[in-house]
Image (cartoon, rainbow, N blue to C red; front, side, top):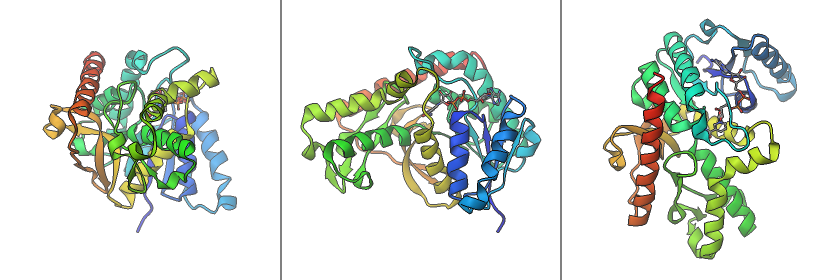
Length: 311
Ligand code: TXD
């Protein structure tokens, strides 16, 4: 069996951290791409030179030429600008729409059978752009956000309760951003609902912190954005796809009839396997959860409308 090939478009903070996680798990050969000549080549060589010590056989190469990405199994799009303090994810629409469009077209031309994982913000709109520009079937275009948002929630809950992160599960639906919908009912410590373990106010505080999780870090950093946790979330998706694990993970997937969304990519639980987003899992939502989800989807729709001008 030949090794899988994973291309990462955008060799900035998130792209590089992802390459490092992929290599450390030996998930496949890695191609780093960027527009800045020298950057992906230098970073790739640096990472490759850690392979004898870390013991991974993944090849790592850097390039500015999409030819080198040909026949990738997975293409990850992290190209684009990140947020600066005071900026919302939505402020990035104009500049990142153009970048994601170009990256998706190039990626699709060279790897017509790949699965596209989109990471660039504003996430839900960029997945839409990537799907249109690549013309890929919808199950082969997936956005990363929910795993990260859930991981943040799980981190805060485990610290609050002083229990292992391994036992804390969480589910976050909706768009990536302030309108995300954490679902405490489906968030548990080894099956025990969080709502039974934490008073309402504390749960609410954790949810609020999760909503603003990216901003909290960006404000601390002043320059730069989050990278370790997003990269880890991307790698979890890659692993589930390449190993056909069929994990159920919250991702931005195409929903038409599902949840009554009507043809948009939004954060929902998805079965991730070798065919990509193999199934959207529909949870029974309570009325208040439905309302939050509806508002979140409305926000995604308005973002998509502004991003479509750049298609
Ligand atoms: O949860 C999530 N989905 C996210 C999203 C979590 C963290 C970061 N998220 C977003 O990912 C962030 O808001 C940005 O839109 C992207 C990438 O963030 P990163 O922190 O990695 O940005 P960098 O370090 O600025 O890197 C971006 C790289 C940089 O090297 C550019 O030269 C390159 O992208 N770039 C390009 N590469 C290829 N092709 C084109 N056209 C291009 N334009 C810029």
